[in-house]
Image 1 (cartoon, rainbow, N blue to C red):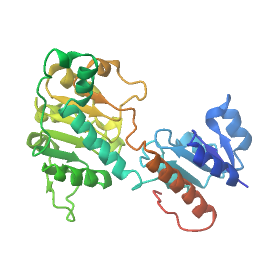
Image 2 (cartoon, helix red, strand yellow; image 1 turned 60 degrees about the horizontal axis):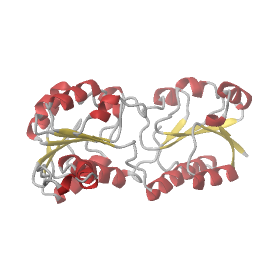
Image 3 (cartoon, rainbow, N blue to C red; image 1 turned 30 degrees about the vertical axis):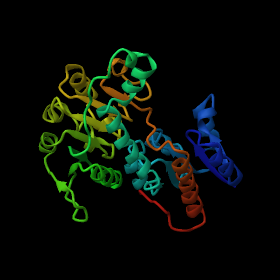
Image 4 (cartoon, one colour; image 1 turned 90 degrees about the vertical axis):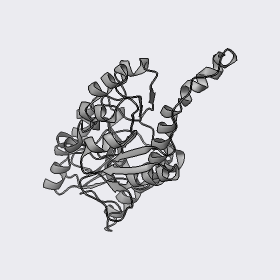
Length: 311
């Protein structure tokens, strides 16, 4: 039976199958994690991880016979890919299966912020409606929407935004000839053109704090920013200042810099809608993600091509 190290739990429907096929070492349950790793290091051939947990070079270096890291999630910025490449360790993730759910939340957060849906719910529940009509909110349809990152999720968001008759433009490293949306190669200019901005970039050093004070200033006081990418892509100090001062109208956030221990200033703001990094958190998507992790492991150890290789 092949030994695998799991950095964090998966849903029960995945755990049962993994434990039936592999000797699973559960790192999160160990009182002494280093001792667990040391006692099984020579036998462990795979790591099954989650996007936010990743696999550091230090962890992989402790496993001399490690062959593959299979990630439950699309983001691999917490996995040291350079170390993996240098040491012949394969890496897989779970793209595509979560694309549609993440795009749904992007549009959902935009509607929630612009139309103030959480505040409207509270307005009914606390009896305010009986005293006066709720103040007016912001229309979404027909507005300029800038997408920062036109990958799988960005393209899915664009399709949804087009159904709202939004004028969709996007920023990326290059223009995509297969898409009809306007390419804007300067992020500040995209912000100037947009009332709404949805961030769908991958994480990592190249995109860290790409949404900064200059971008927020260009977006302006009618602007709304939605982040469904990684917490690292937005400079939260600049974002909080913009939200508190009214430099932008609002924000919808599924991800944060220091999640789940987020900056408490967010909790005091009525112009931000918060999500607990749950954009892919549907039963359907999580089952598909777990299946893809298991299928990649089965393909590798069965001598077949990986389904979704990263490295």
